[in-house]
Image (tube, rainbow, N blue to C red; front, side, top):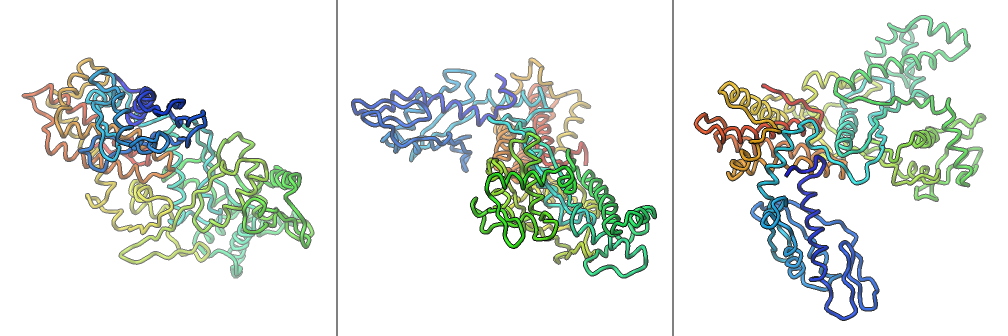
Length: 589
């Protein structure tokens, strides 16, 4: 019995409950004459055939806080009490009577089911299901943990998108990691994901950057709204003379011409920094191309066609209050040329994105952009798109702490720590772990000194050490002439069955089997802190197992091989969890 590669044990248990519910319909039918039993997932009919209160919620499965209650529990009977007009305990007993367990079918993932007040169904997994899952890990380690959602989508995720006016600083790290981690999880769940970076190379900030470079190059004072960082002086030194000359010959503002050149230098540096931390982007999109290629004009025309714009004092205004915004928004300024606003470019960007065939687009912004959410969704709805298919994830603040003091930053003044400097000091793995371990909406106090520690105080070090320790045990076993059997070894099933009777082995197998459901939950919630918690739990369970069970024992080769197979699966699972976080799984430490 080998579970499907994309089906978690939790999903298998849920399917077993669904099937038992269907079989229990006759037992649950109302006693009143004329009432018709409902099909599974529906409410029973009332006398006369009128449906009772509908039951559309999926079957909920959770892990009991107290493992003595079993591996999984469901409150289905309590949810059905009202529509069935029966006591939850009666409903639970009726469903439990129809659950297929290993007592009647060796292929069932369920060893036993118990009913507990006030109507819970508690399930215990079969050792055979745990053994089959471990076999699955060893058979195909590369895909272990990947699942297949019911409705996979093509999703565009745009993140970071810092203006190209300076290097990425440590304040940009949260958006970078949040976006990258989300993309990894959505991909593992079966979605097709494309990562996108959008940069503003069209506005006044780019002109101010160019003006700063020109001023330094010509020995003048930097403009009031200019940039003062060391990187600006470096660009002034490296500025090709022909850039300025070409601008003057074309009678173009030198600040704009140099700003375009400078922003491209910064963009290239940003791309290199992101690649360093493991953030790859499939698409780099600039604001200027939206204007040049006509997407902004097309969007404004579509809003006009929908009857959702009006003129006021020479400006063109989008009637966003019609779709839930708190006020209407200017999209074309009251200037002679009716120059588009930044928001107009955002609207054009929505049209351009959906033209590429995405079913959902996700923006990852800082929490200071919360006021933008309603207006962008309003524009999407006016354009004819489903507003729920335009999603914003707002990341909370991050305070970087060193020696108990917050680090202050300002890109304009040049007082900041670059992302490259942070990664050079603490390493990519530590940075990723610390950001992944908090919900995107939760603030973080990032302790730089703690992230640098090479001890169990540092959680990422603790988990990586568990992986390295297993690798060391497997090497020593090979040296002793005992190896973990491969996934296709015909002896494997029997070896695992013999060791899973032990408490530490069974507990480790249960933790290993959780990875697919962790991926399912992370993709559904679009959060990754559950993965760091799971990796820590798995590492802790392994350390406890190793303390209580002798893995390499030449006097008991079969037991040793069974335990080696189990820890090999744990090693693969730890590597899979770390891989979802973009963190390395070292073979030695």
